[in-house]
Image (cartoon, rainbow, N blue to C red; front, side, top):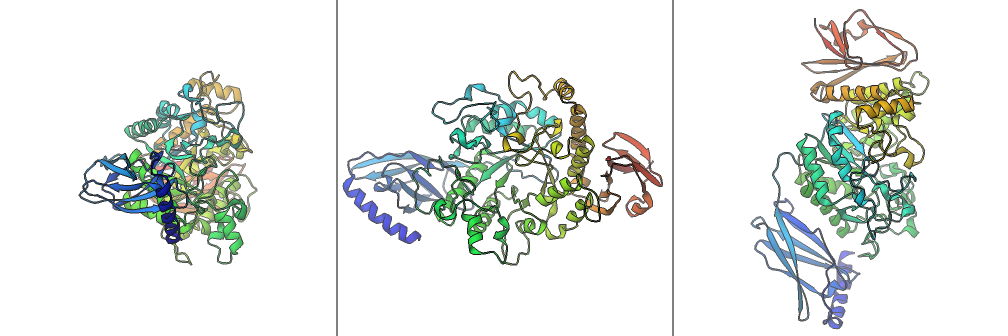
Length: 626
């Protein structure tokens, strides 16, 4: 296919060169707009865009940099240049000359030296607690950029599906709040330009219209760097949200497609069936597989065809560019199972080859443990697939948590669901790298799901913060924000993030006021989450200790996190009645201990033959010796 494209494009070039010698050479875009020395992969593909740019011949004259290949495509407004940056190349400005007839235009292309700063590209792991927020709904730090002339949507806070005006400056201004809450990493939904019409509700960031530019209604690329640098300076990490399955219909290259196979045709495949298990189903029909992988996510998000080598290289380089440019510590890859899995594997391999300390979590919204584990690197798949993906989102554990705390208990229902789901961890190559959560921007809020029952909320959060895996919380969980149903209602504005908000929940006084208004124990919830999150920061026993659990009895789940230095006992009573636990049952892990400090209740006591547990009580017990 590529050879045929090259032949057709060469003919186009010859024809254009004959008829366009007098036209000026216009270069509207070169992406990526810079690169670096020192990458393991020395080649970088430049997308060059401009009217009839194919009729101009490119050349390079710079020590250590060679033009290895020029790829021409059907659309005469594109050419793709492959530069090789050899080991001896020094940072500097490469002049790329474009010549048509007697006319030459020079584009200055910067090559930089890669950073070796130790606090960049750190990765994330089970020692972290991730705080997920939506920039548009968190805080408005710069109202002057709410409306940008020429952009298609402004701000309407009265509409839950419109832009509300949150921005990068708002996040920067409240990093102290996030740090004080005990969070060690921040993940926010995409910040790239989403210049889509208002009816598409692209405030969420998942319909990119420029993959190298921060949305101007969020701020600038430079402000994004400022945010990352400040977070790093405070000892926090930053995780970037990316999407390689699709872009928005108003993306600049969708309006003028380079090739016919840049995206899958909507008229052929329609929208996706969302049945991602077809990707590994040994009995899946070709029709269903195509619907999953080639169907558009929604009609305003064109589905990229990563079988096109130019598309695949463009996307991989975009990722490498952002990592090196910004210093981010990890990536959350949206809709990970929807693109071609072979491409996703090569993408992850390339990223980790260049940044070995980095981490990636793939959003694998799968129905059960086997189909989730399939995506984690090292899984012994029947088809020989190797994903190279270190971390996956643990939706099966989320489903068990929600059902387990809300349904009637039984042999395999109620809180026993947590036990049975974790007992399948032998399928994961490394379950401790799973990202676990009580909710996110696509799910009803945890306090709402728990029926606004504070005790159930504490059970859920205590579990997430003490079981295996990498915990991720959702902005507002700490102040018992509610919301469910339509997406806009799951993504309410954080109170106090906008000038004029009557309540400012970023402050102690504001949380008191919010509790008085809602009738919820807001202050208590915030203090509880902060206390446990800060407590776990230096607890290697929680980060990496062994997990030993006991079959739930009477809807009470007991498990231990333990290593050679320390033992933690966690008790979750999912019953609406008090329970008295016979401690002899747990003697294999209690031997030598006679006291406990309850992190949740902030009190200490001596251990006896029985442990009294209140209805729907969560206990996190540091075991000790008096």
